[in-house]
Image (cartoon, rainbow, N blue to C red; front, side, top):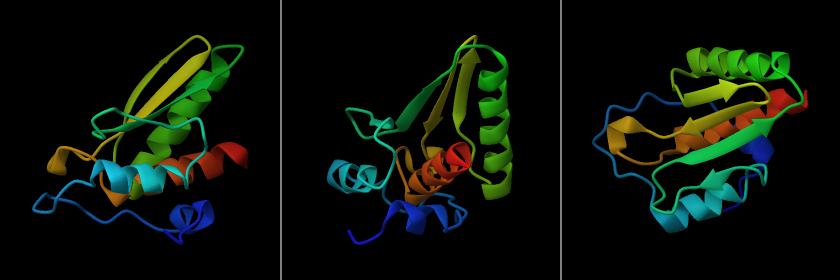
Length: 116
């Protein structure tokens, strides 16, 4: 795949109401190469997840809010867990019961926002 992290971060999510197949494990594995190495792919390729770790609570809240802001902008909402010192973000596309390009676009955008 010729796309890079910057290419993904520059894209926007497209509404997904199902009717398309989820990415295969091979496709998802290839797209993982375009994300920060801290993202993990579920064994069954049903979601991608990243745990951000911090030395306090405020940065975990900040990261949660950043992920929420991004989700509202893109219309693609992750599952988020947070607590003292961590924020875990999990992307999946419920309409296809697996992963879509939208999950990787949002992950790349979140990576870019965290590096800014």
